[in-house]
Image 1 (cartoon, rainbow, N blue to C red):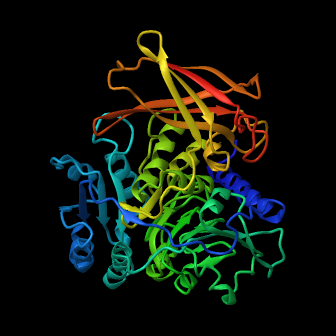
Image 2: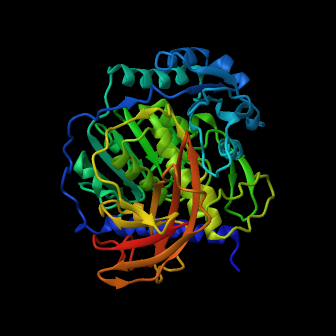
Image 3: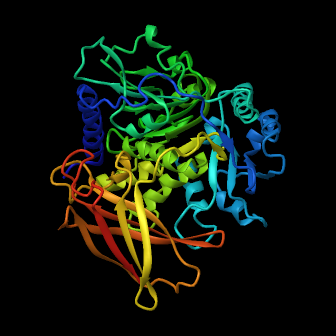
Length: 509
């Protein structure tokens, strides 16, 4: 049996290898919107929902200037103390109106994956469903002044003094198929081609030594940036370390990072030996803190090993929903719940010496649950510019149930049709295909006792699949059924279900 470290290395190696394969092929280029920037993005903030400011005792003292500055956007925010060791306490103290958004001010040495997981679990305990009810952004930095500078950029975006440029750059990272010093920056994108509908799009790949000092301005002019590759708290391997992250020439940007550990601000747990070792990254070399010191207005990354597809699902969700970043990171957590069969996976406390006897699915589910947002969760960076992945048609079934038909609507959303946690149907490919939907339930529908997968068809033929999980969410007076159905893949992000005439029929009683 493989050790946890072996399994994790196999998964990460697979992702890295696929990335290298993709960028090594030039025929995939999506030239719509390629290269040249479009008009600036229409960013906005959700200001009509209750919000709470939380701060540790240390952060309240050191970040007082930043807290007061952010009140220019949220003058009515309630301020409460945040005990990282006991997050349930603050949630138990919420009064009406119950907050929908939370901004947590926390010092870098106070935040690690255990704190994030504990807060995530606490945010699911506001009601009796397994979903997060509080959309959260963390604010931290290497010094009080750097935190104030970060908040000042957010406020400037709100005031219209700065804008997000209409350009997206996907930095795919080191590529072993290229020469050591090779560097490619080319129009188009394979992983999230839908961004070409609204933004100028470029992709970057390079050899192990290709991202040289002379390339530090290659991301200039982009309002949305993605980093991929294999990561540690102080670097993306063969790409960029935390020192040079501060020297990048960046325009104001929302930055998505899919590399492992690149959200770490202090303590972290090394999984490479199969037994956990707690370590610390120096503030001046932490990649995440480097991004927050630079021109980021928001940064999304993981505090533990994750893998590279959920970050693209976040970006696709943003494209078709125009949602706030708080809802974007909630979408990730929702996917973890449904991918785990309709419940949040166990998120254990990590300690030095702990053996990780986790399956690949457990590694990836928990790693994805370690993704966090740094910034204001009410920020909506752009307006929706494309259609959703799944069309949902609802009709009555018998006297007390519903018939739900799911069909593909937007096949440019490639990651949205990919189950990154399972591959048992995938015919030797790395991931199953999936249909993931959030179905609004009528107010007069009785409590649900069963959800049945009746039929999957594609091209007029039935195909096999399975109902991965479902769960009911109650959110401020409304009810939703989250569900996911998996189908076989025929290749990497390809499968028979990915066609307009496909459908899934589900009955709900």
